[in-house]
Image (cartoon, rainbow, N blue to C red; front, side, top):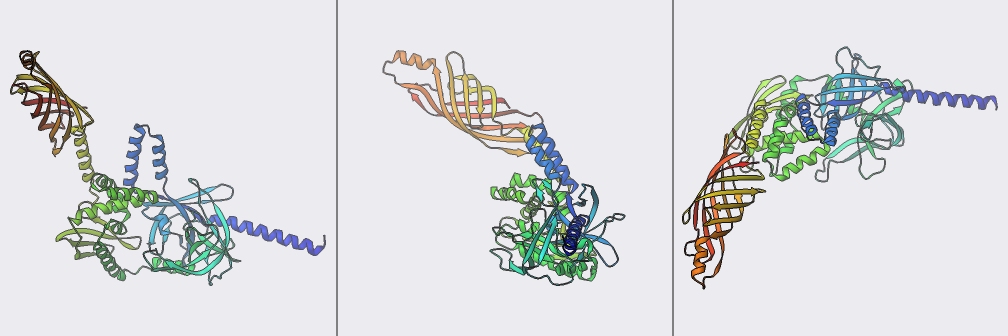
Length: 560
């Protein structure tokens, strides 16, 4: 090999080694972000997990454990002119998080986790968030931003932690810029243009969100500069991914690190105007309300809201909650809290809302709305640089007694046992034509039953019936009006004697009967109930001159 060829090989080897080393060094600047949920949300799911475990539903317990590990995404370190370090990521990576951590993983497998990251700015429209480290925590260094415009056809690189199943793994991908200034409508129904974005082909998978889009740059940390923040991928398109350009990210960081309190009230007024405007549409507005809720509002009220939603909302709303869970469980909880707010203000028809009063200052205001001629008080706070609802009326106030009341009502309803699938009862019946009788009855599957009258060897009757029963709860008791209709087979000695005397007697000892009455039960003695009823035989299939026509019944029963 010639000396020149050998020198070329050495240079290529050194360059490749430098490239590999630089790519590996990115791991010190790009980390895995993990979010933890509000303590009330965690407590709610821990309680759910306990109930599932008692029922032996192991798969469901594993699903809850997986959820409690928190959603993950990617983020990278930047610094300001004073040398303070921050994490840049996407809004949707940290949405509704209560606390956050970032983990840096080196090639040798060593991991460094930094907890207690604080969200200092969050922009849903731009899908950007800025996180600060807790005092005393410091990363290895920071990436720098690209200082020039990126060009189409230029090589770019993605870095982050997409998931392999449920396990996030480091990934470094390579591609090229296919559109330097991509703009497109928000949706089929909304032609408002989003962007510009950098469209590129570098590998981006779920979990890459919030990670950097990079270009190779000599003398930059790890040999790369940040051209943008990866945020989304196009469906049904091959290798079509989008990043928020560096200049947009830098403007967001600059605004976040240099807040202007003199503009906060104007921003609040704008948010309130949008909130009121969105309430006036002729459709369900809880998805609109959900976009204004703070993470604390969702966390503190989710358990009560979910209980209310599945106890009182229609099937369409409940199905919408389930579908939202497939996208984001915490987002679905926000829907539930928003639904309780809408349900409390809507009344019977359209929502007519107006702003009545705004008072306060700094980062917290009390806002009173007049909705359908009724006033509702709310608190609005600046959360992550934006105005959001902290409390609204009584249903989203964080009042734990609402949950306690709901649990008490649930326990009372269980003790009342008004919807039991099986019950048996016995008592006294006065047969107007036959006199005193023993009465026994049993109900199966709530709608079917059988009964037996015994007035001695001279008369007894056995019947089957279908029943409808209502429930009127009154605190710790419940009234249960009922009505049933059925057929009774009657053994009547008087009828037998009548047939013996009159060979022309015809018919069959069957009667159609209607019975109605009122039962009552109390939660203090679960399952036990009493009641009274009246039965009337509509017609009899024999011509007995003295058939059983009417009966008055008192009974005591037990529901299983």
